[in-house]
Image 1 (cartoon, rainbow, N blue to C red):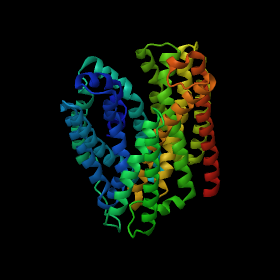
Image 2 (cartoon, rainbow, N blue to C red):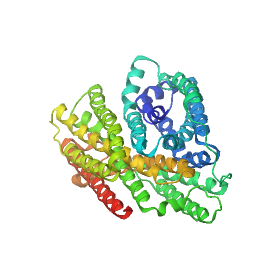
Image 3 (cartoon, one colour):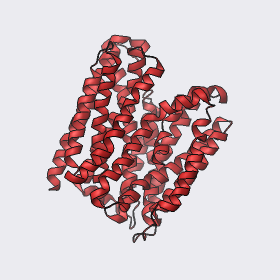
Image 4 (cartoon, rainbow, N blue to C red):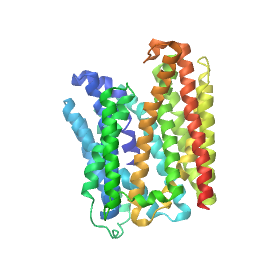
Amino acid sequence: MTFMSTLDSSIVNIALPVMQRELAATAAGIQWVSTVYLLVCCATVLIFGRMGDTFGKVRLFQAGMALFTVGSALCGLSTTLPALVAARVVQGIGAASAMANNMGIVTEAFPADQRGRALGIVSTFVSLGMMCGPTIGGVLVAVFPWESIFLINVPIGAVAFAVGLKTLPRDVAAGECNHIDIAGAALVVPAILLLFCSLTFMAQGVTPMLVGMFIVGAVLFAAFVAVERRAAQPLVQLDAFRNIPFSVNLVTMLTCFAAVGATEYLLPFFLQDACGFPSGVAGLALTAIPFGMAAVGPVSGALSDRIGSALPCCVGLVIYAVGIACTGYLPMTAPLAVIVGGMLVMAVGTGLFQSPNNSFAMGSVGREHLGFAGSVVSLVRYLGMSVGVTGGTALLYGHMSALAGRPIASYAQGGAEPFGQGFAFAFSVFAALSLAGAVLTVLAARVGK
């Protein structure tokens, strides 16, 4: 389920041109098929995390899996753009319910000395889902109609739901809270929708309307925090953020996924536009990242069970920064094997970081707040990816524009040399952010002692 839900955040991108033609949609309209899924996940994940703590994480996970499967079927049966977007909303709600509670279930089911390894496997499938979307989507669209990218989820989801009925643990008794903060939910949903929507579309250009949306979202989020401070049974446990190691680990997770979002978005342009590789070759080369993560994730999780989370997190971020910097400064004439080698170093770094980081975040809260912690981890992951895409685009084309002395918004407008310099500049910034995350991890470990 974790793999399917993260896969569906990226698998549709490769099929958008085909969908646009067959549904007779505009370029702006078809983008909502991709965007609305991410927005709905972000806006509702905190609510489902709180509901999991209140009504049972397994119950919410299973309900989310069923809703995701139904939404996938509706997507595959859609014949108009509005129907497809509405079905993606259903799918996103189901994914949010499941993803808010999956790590909480794993944390409860495994003892502390096995938690890192178990969460490492979960993190591996998160990474695989995010990175394999374009590759799997490309294969399906090449062989079958575009509906196949959604309909393939239906039998897998049905089997997973049935297996879950037999294998998932029974929900433990709910905590003391049996009430959902309606006022907080009414504020946080539009706040996150506005913030994420504005950040997502700022990647295509900053406009006064997007800036206004961002400001309104920030004001609503500030009001949400004020309401939560006075609520008897808050939607979000703000006291958890007073735990400095927990908060610092969330910040380092944000920096890591911002770098993941930026590099994942910019690397295809580098491979195809700058280096001249065909799209099929570029897609195959990019699979080095998820497979590298898949190999390292469980190992790093097991390592954190033995020696703690701080050292693997720190080393992972340093390796990731080195990989980003080396890849960013590669010449456009570099052999494909060298480029893949740089991406593998990046994959090793992120794989080494993510599992221990998740293990620490989930292990630093009480059993009654595991749903909350899992939902915050998912939200930070989505936020980091969104900020990374927007920031990476702004850094790349902003630097190209500064070099040319005129606005540039594409590779064709700037040419090879400005693109190479802008690409190196953007990757340097995110390498520096990853190193800053490593420093924060060391400081948090010292404070926690």
